[in-house]
Length: 398
Image (cartoon, rainbow, N blue to C red; front, side, top):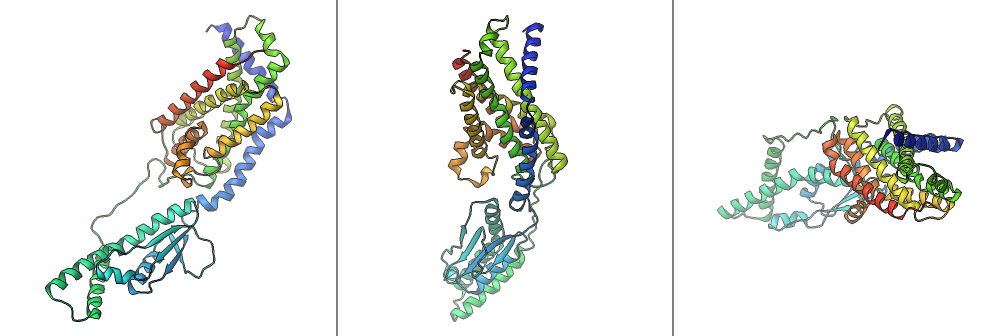
């Protein structure tokens, strides 16, 4: 591609950018609304995703009322991550732990006892609470296993004179084992890579900042569909064809103009997220740039493909808004995919927005670099190739 072609591409791109910003509403949609939504959603999500020091409320139903069940309740209450509530509590909690009647009796008999943990809602708190419950009960379960083994061994050597003596022996062994397990000689220390905090997902403002970036740039980038349809209806594309400009140059100019708009908007939202909302956009600006560009390419290509399915600008606007909101919502821009069912998560990976949010999560929450987001970059490039091939194949110039 020669210098003359490049100049024509840039001329087409600059013309489209000027037309886009000739209306005041464009400035509002580009910058004001995304920042406003980020602020509102960041505050509202803060309670659910960013309270790392807060205890998660958990309801405990003790149907057994035994000495062993009291040990279980005490172990849960001593957890730094859980706030235990009684069964009589009416407050809404994400998790409920039920100690069934006969738990102590089954353990003393040598049978398996099951403690039921029910997730009452699908949320990040419920997932975290379930993990905290398992961690808190691990010493109790191990101590009970050791005590039962000691009890069975002692019983084979000398039978107990009464069930009371047997129970007293069991709890003496249980208490000794529990104290010993509190001071195990091996300590496991978990450290996060890059950011100095252990984070599986995004905090409130991180989720809001990344999610609103994806949502609003989807609208901007899919605007390629409306731009192409408008120029086709007005006959602008047809008039361009009679000039010494090839279809490739025209289409490339349109893509460059739309990409520039999207990249400009993303840059503003990233900088605003960092300065206004204190969002750490990772340790690798290069990885962030590559993900942003590949995401923009895939969505612009989708916009070109969508332009072949609509007849007029009004219809194109409706398709753009519907497609943008659908891709954002299903792709994890509005809520973390971790709280959705496994099947939903698999189906969601058929969307470019899912791969973009996944990449942003790795970069923001885990401090990932380019090597950590190569699968996401590859998927976004594959979407670009697919959508662009469909768009070019079906594109109508008149």
